[in-house]
Image 1 (cartoon, rainbow, N blue to C red):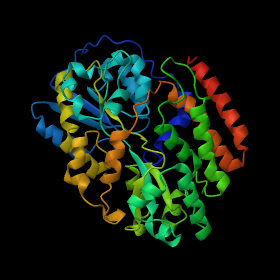
Image 2 (cartoon, rainbow, N blue to C red):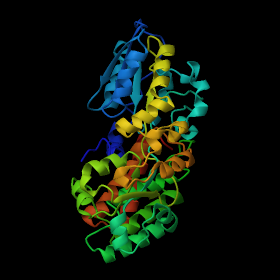
Image 3 (tube, rainbow, N blue to C red):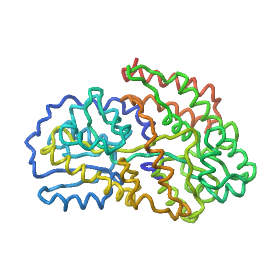
Image 4 (cartoon, helix red, strand yellow):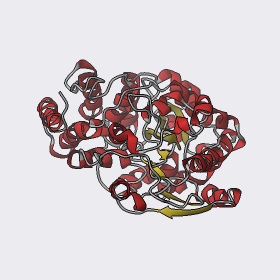
Length: 425
């Protein structure tokens, strides 16, 4: 199971509690540190950009020597090390979506992209995604590579066998709420006892949190993880477990479950389509995509940033804006399942063509509108660390049969302790 794609966010929040404040990397003058302005470096991780687009950027900017590095291992830690030693920092770097909030308090370690040309381009990109990379004083430190608009992936053949609607439009309308979705799951499991609706309840919790307008910490740096919006998300997430429609998959059995029909649906981001097709090529043509119950949500999506020590930030941003142009974002979707952040790309052939794995369905008709309706939500630097106990406790319910009410109390208690250690009120 590839944690870097399907379950990267869960892995991120479970490690964030210990990673905590590592992004506090000190001040920065913004000087170039004597770097050669004609020799630029770009860091990203495997799958973070289209390798083909990156290769073409070297040809397009022939007057610049662009050295690219696909960095393995803990990308954030290696980037932090580079930022502390100016000469080791890249001129352009990827920043993962789950890490961007932790860098915002140290925005001066990066170039404000609005000062090198981004101000003219921002209207072409999704405003809610740009806001994720904007500091409280208005500095834009990251330009968006991709996003993860979410949907319901479902097995049309299994839905038909259970007497459920099968057309994407009908599934979207008839399973538009979480309760409707769970009700369908009960009917499905009754008709096909070895088939379950969801893989685990943590995935439901993640989707619902993403649908809201508040997370675990507010803009005044106050802990709100015990308030009604989180409590409601918790109670809804636990329902599949109590209804017996939860496959309780939190290990490496997911691939088999996707292949053998043990899972009839998956709720996940646009990039999750690649995971499903890779895990179960034999099910090609049986899957469809419908709107996510409860409204749009986002999972993942990263950025390109320019460290303040870059030798030529103006040229660096020209490279960024070329790599992330709508046309090249469409190529990134084809090459690496990177869903574009520029809505103009949604009209290009790479996204409007039918997908054979999904029975020829034009899945952009689901993902495109969802992407444009996602809420702009404040995410505090400590949000990932504070949210980790909720996912851990949901797993304890499934793996150990822990009482959901006790699990809730323990999650809130642990989250408060982490929040206090992170300086949250």
